[in-house]
Image (cartoon, rainbow, N blue to C red):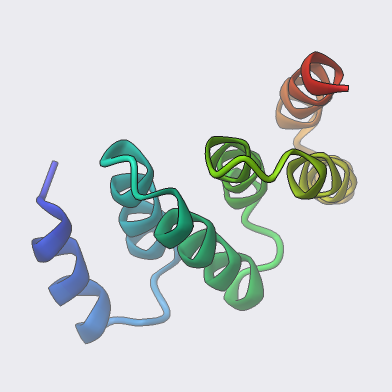
Length: 102
């Protein structure tokens, strides 16, 4: 996996790439940079509202940042998006994650 710095360079060259944006957000989360991860996942969802992993991992980042209520809302939103795009597996995983924090 490329480093965060490499991903940022690639993303700057192609800001419309959802997977690169997701990779940047995941790297922030992996490094424990929860606030930056939350912001990066929010930008991913803004640009690519049907990119289901952005909801699941964005909610996890919010949990990591101590924003449990925001995470609950994001899980609920992600479940709705997952149903809409036909990703029942992701909807189920987010439902399980939501139940674990309620």
